[in-house]
Image (cartoon, rainbow, N blue to C red; front, side, top):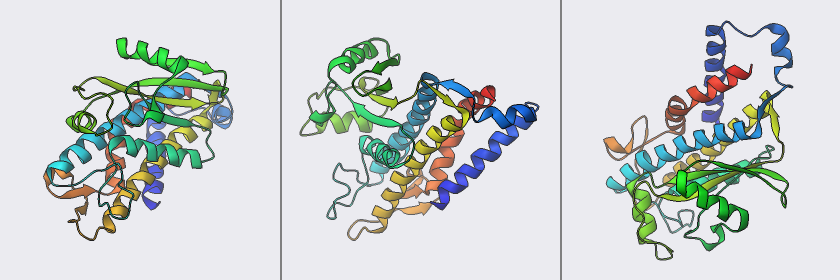
Length: 272
């Protein structure tokens, strides 16, 4: 996980620079900032959802979409020994969610739909009702799940790339075969047990998501290293748009940071 440690260092340094540019934080406030209730759960889940949107869009378009044009394969059975492929976007998200579940951070994440490929991911009850609203205006929905005792947030998951549309329309188990670019295909659902979070808890949530991203991407690179029949892309600082290349985890996460972290940083700094 050396790449993730580097990313954490970069993020901490960037935050320090922003704080300096803003005139810094009074010493007495800094000491207590980690313990004060800084954010509502809705604010935190929106922050991590935005990070997720950027990460998944980058993976879907720049890795899967461009990678397929270079002959790279992506498959729902990518973890099987006889399948030499990478994870589809939905499975990339599932890998992130699995990593988060293994962390000490009580953050829940899953992807659902009213027309899922996997029937187990079909929305029911309250979530089905709220998803109908999301399809109308694409606005997030927040509610408290009484059964699970968890604060819950649902965010529209759009068909943002041709790779999403083609894969779902052509899948043998698809419940809907006329998806189009821009359609609301489902919703990412995030859950957390508390109604407000301290600054430290908020950073822990964001770090757990970043760690999950690194974990699943590194697992993909490890899968490639084990290829026996397929041509292996060169791993480095180049992307599939340039040829049979894939970025390292550090390069991939650095691109995510540049695209997503500025807005998140502003919210973190404002709370300080």
